[in-house]
Amino acid sequence: MADGIFTFLGHATCQLTLPDERVVMIDPWLANNPGCPDSCKNVSRCDFIALTHGHFDHAEDVADLIEKFDPHVVGIIELCDVLGQGSPNGKFAPMNIGGTQTIDDVSFTLTRAYHSSSIASVNGPFYTGMPCGMIVSADGVASCYHAGDTDVFSDMQLIAQLFAPKVAVLPIGDHFTMGPKGAALAAKFLNPNSIIPMHYGTFPMLHGTPDAFRAELDASLKDRLVVPKAGESMTWTADGIKAG
Image (cartoon, rainbow, N blue to C red; front, side):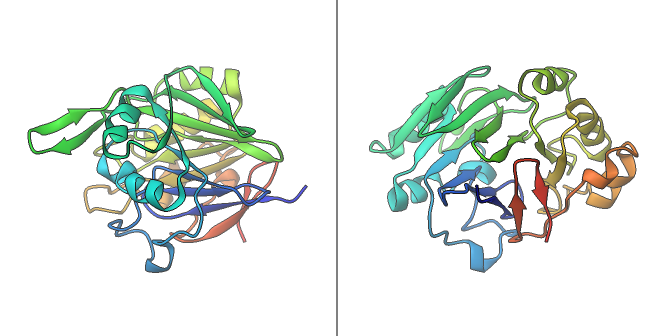
């Protein structure tokens, strides 16, 4: 079977292209994302959207992608309900933490995360349910855990025990999420084959860096760290992510 493609689109947005060329967009923030290259802002395909929470830098482009591609949209039930008010014809697939659902042979699992979740409104932040992590699984490619915005928490060991994700995409920026030290502990708990940092450098306050993350990682995990540039595509195999 052919491999898939993992493309980092800046900040926390990841594009997973399955071996059959279907596309899963995780936390799409494209048009106004300063970390997303201009050449990547207009995607050519989107079959699934997987959402970790409602903040603008994770969900701002959902309505536009629904209008263009009519994808399945997977997320926690409250977030799907709120987004559905603006896109009533969208194919929303709501769920909750701990659950797994399979749509057209692609499985999505919601895990807990320690953060907040809301959408801005004229009356202030509008609650959109609990923040989550997301595990995406499909035949032929390594299961991918996108932690969303979170601090490290000891139950990441349960995520490893229950789901054994081979790819972990972890925030390292600090201030709004865990920083490099916390992310290194998360990587130790998860013990994946491939570790990809995200949610850093987009704004000055997100000061965690891949170099600082590497320095904090256990020696046994350092060679599993893969640091893509924004817009860079990497091979997504059954074992993990390979740069180049």
